[in-house]
Length: 461
Image (tube, rainbow, N blue to C red; front, side, top):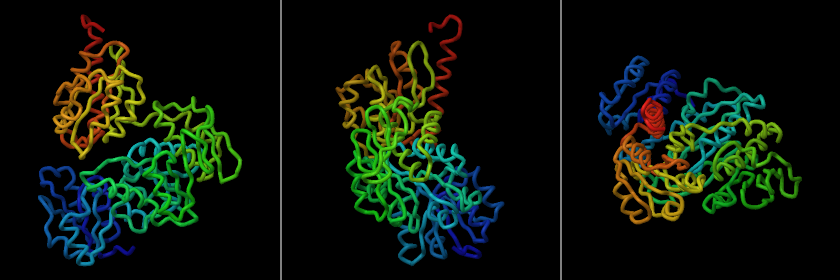
């Protein structure tokens, strides 16, 4: 892709948008950025862009700004169907995302992971496995480091392990990972994609440009994921925690095994008991990682070593502290109903659950059975609180806490020794926090303050 002297507009000044703008400017493009937020809201971002020679438009998107461009690069947080982008496409202006831009320049092989839940844990684990066996490995994408920032560090021998979201896949054209992993597809981001069918179609785009020389790893126990097998030219490998499969990874007795080809030998990988992560869903994540790593040429014994020393990713069923016998867990990344289900399934009972945030057109009644069996109290927060309280009325005791701090204080006052306080909100964070990381770190700080208060003289602990 020739960029020198091209007029390029970057829409959306999130992390990936800023990285894309600076990348394009470094390659000689005439770059403009446009964001709906005010200059005051973007006061931290604007100086570096202006210093690099990037023009900045704030307080909305001007239609004329979009018309005079050779290329438009849209950030994942910006809906693809906005009027300005629709008009640009009608005028024949190419519109791509940061992931697509990066893949045009990225060197080495790509292993890409998508799914409604488990992406970050699985991506991190695959990256660790490759790195631990000596491969030149870079990890990025939706996991936190924009893919475009990896480009300068890649070579033909690099293994690029990328977490990719439905928002990123919405704007891909030539993106073709050598190994693609689809963990699961459950309702999420319906406020953005309009329907579950549209959302599932976005996930399937991960394999749209793969060939027979590539590999696609799918969940044998997830029906929407199974349907992706009919949309690929890649070689399909499966994973299952419930039953044997003909090609891929599964649990056999008490161990994880891998079958490299249909009718081939069954290779032992590791005992399930050695997985250091909590929850049955993390067994699935490990199975998917085993498939990707074996397809990437990593020996089984190296996979076992890497998995055994893997630590839980921040904000994913992360143990924070124990206070007065009550365990506090941060699962702020549980931003949809299915993720909250998986978090609850990791605990047999005695849970005090913090739910709420910005609603994504979710159905919280799907949580009712698990809450009835395992949850003592629900504390609601954020703008979705009223909807959650209405849909879960009568299932268990519900307290309208409003804020995260109030929710922690409420649950701490109610919980008894042996109970669990779990932040697994089933919502996005954007009503009260910058992102789910901000929410998770706020939760941890509130819990640490609780630890400090309970440890002071004269306070019962």
